[in-house]
Length: 66
Image (cartoon, rainbow, N blue to C red):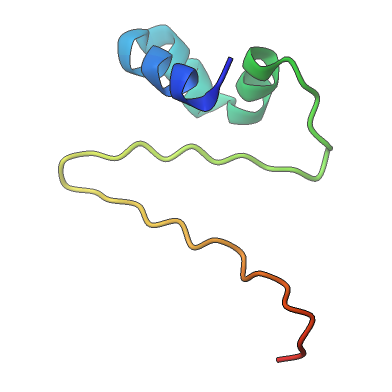
């Protein structure tokens, strides 16, 4: 299953969406058929008409010191 399929399913399956929001890592592992390292955390944010979320990616490692 790909990410767009997970999003689509969450839009159409309320029980799945609630499971994804409550247990994101466990649900993603099950849907993707993978086991993620213990130190990996997954956060799911649901946008609403009045809330937008901006994800600030990690700064690329350029090999230069700051």
